[in-house]
Each structure stands twice: as structure tokens, then as C-alpha cells.
Amino acid sequence: MSEKLFSKYKVIDVDTHITEPATVWTDRVSSKWGNKVPHIQQIEGRDFWFIGDEPAGGPGFYTFAGHDDTYPNAPLGYDSIPAASYDADARLKVMDEEDIYAMVLYPNLGGFGSGGFLRLGEPELMLECVQAYNDFLVDWSSADLNRLLPVMALPFWDVDLCVKEIERSASKGHRAVLFGSRPESFGMPPLAHKHWDPVWAATQDAGLPISFHIGSGDISDISQDKSEMGVKANFSRGGALALLDNQSCLAALLFGGVCARFPGLDFVSVESGVGWLKCVLEMFDWQFVNGQVRKEHPEYDLLPSEYFKRQVYGSFWFERNGIGEAISEFPDNLMWETDYPHPTSQYPSPNSTAVHPRDYVEDVFEGVDEVVARKVLQDTPARLYSVEL
Image (tube, rainbow, N blue to C red; front, side, top):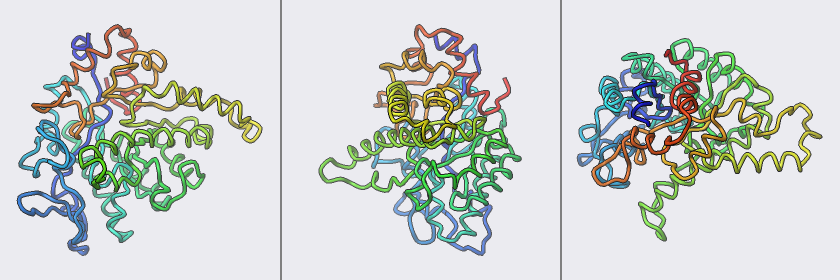
């Protein structure tokens, strides 16, 4: 079924990542900062990002598409990863090969909620680097602005700067705003706090959705070996638990009144799966009613599940059991992704169990009404990310 769908519709992949090229920041940030600017150094044959004298990961550690091993045995660097991870023309070629019309683009080095920029230490430099990344991503996407869909980073440590950056980057063509699900892990107010209302208001005014990508809080322990389980098991554990953060994020939006205060703002839970939604939303409604929340907040005119259906979306890429039920329950709120080129993306390596995107979709959409399939694969993401069809 999916091969027909892939040829019939303009399928949109709502979660992919760009492996930032080595000169993103050194080409765009003032030279007065010297080696504090993120830059690449090669050590014993491996490419590493450095901020000053401190290592900050490397392109090979998050670019595993086609690689025949798992963390910590990562590719060495740019010469051993697919060009499509860092080159826009090569990315478009892969998209054509896989019959994927458009891809939404998320970062790596800056973190999935922009917390990585805090490592720079200097507020002025932090802002320069956020702006440099956002400008770079628009330039990168200019290879085809209707198929490569940039998501802006924010200087979330300063709300006024966030508002200015939303206005600046939206005018340049960004399609969504990236925000962290656990700002409190970086010493900021929690997600439901009205401290963030200017950010939500500016994003709503810009007509953009907010993206909450998993792993956007403090994930420093994921790469640390836990002696009782080993490196690979601990890394896999951390990746699995990151999905749970977005359930807490959803609770903050729904119980904290964010959806109620900003009814025209859409939110996307990225890379968190969707099979859990029915259970969790039913639990939210149960707690909401039995906790008599409306006595405290009469302005909450909908149940949590109703707010969700009105303005929250989820994405999936690995689920098989129960995915049909989730699609049936939330036909207007689900989208599909691949997570290219991350370790658990839908692009197979020689010995992995991953499959090509169209093969996965062929299986999970078996028996799904084509009108619903079109919504999930094309219409819903096209509307959210302003893709011309």
C-alpha cells in the first residue's frame, strides 16, 4: 500500500537532523572570540567539536545511517559518514531515492533544546552562535526551500532575546521553533511557568509551531558508562527513557494552561512515539476530573485530551504494535518521521534490523483508510510547516 502512497502523495518526514558542517560557526561568528567558537579538531583520526579547549562531541557520534555498528563505535568523522548528513544537495538526492518529498530539520551540536549553547559561557557569544546557526540553516535549506524545512534554535536563557530571534528567523523562512521540554534542568523556570508566555505569544503571532524534541533536557549521563550494564546498554537505556520526558512535557502544557492561554499555537512532540498517547491522555482526563481542576481554573474550558486533539501533534517511526489503533484514535494529530541520520533512524546498515522508510510504512499502514494515511503522511505536516503541495 505504501509504495502507492509514496508515489501518490508528497510524503513529509517530520524529524531529521543535520550534521553541522565544520565551518558553520567559524565562518559566521566574529573572530574576536578566538577558539571559543565551536570548531573541529582531529585527534587520532577522529573529528571532534571543540569549544575552546573543551571537547563537545563529534559528527560521527550522531551520524550512524549506513554504519555497521552502534555507540560507542561511531564513524570517525566527515570522511566516513554519508554526505547527505551535512550536504543539502546530497540530502535531496537521498530524499528522491526514498520517495520522500520534504524533511523537517533539527540540530545536533546545539542540543535538541539549544542547551548546548550554554557551554559557550559568554552570553554575547551564545547569541551570536544561535543566530549563526539559524542563518546557516536557512542558507542550507535554500537548495530547495519547499523540501528542506528549517527549525530555529532559541537563546532560551533570555526571553526578550527569544522574542526578537523568533521574529528575525521567522522572516527568513524558518518553519518552526525548537524549545526544550525541561528548561528547569538548565536553571530556568519550568515549562508551565508564565515566564515563557512571551515566547508562546511571539510564536503564535508568527504562525509557527513549537517543537519539543526528546532529549532536550540534561542528558549528560547517557554517554557515561554504568558499570552494572555496560556502554551500549546504558546508551540504549538513555535513548528509551528520553521518550518519557515528552510525557511530562505534555502534562505541563495541558495542566499548566499553556494550551488554554494560546489556543492558536500548535505543539509537536518530536521523536517520542505515539502508542502511549491514548493511555496517558485518558489518565490526564481522569486526574483532571477527579482532581476538580476546574474549581481552581475555570478558564480551562476543555479536557486535557480535547486540548491535545485541538493543538498537539506526535510523531512515530519504530512502532508496530498498536500503531493502527493510535492512528485510528488520533487521525488528525499524528505524523511520520525517520530520525535520519541518528543511531536508531529508519535507514538500515548492513547488520541492522531497520528497514527502508517506504517498507516500514507499507507494513504499518496496511488496512489504514487512505484519507487518514494522506493526513498523516502529507496533509497534517504540510499544514503545520507551510509546505506547498
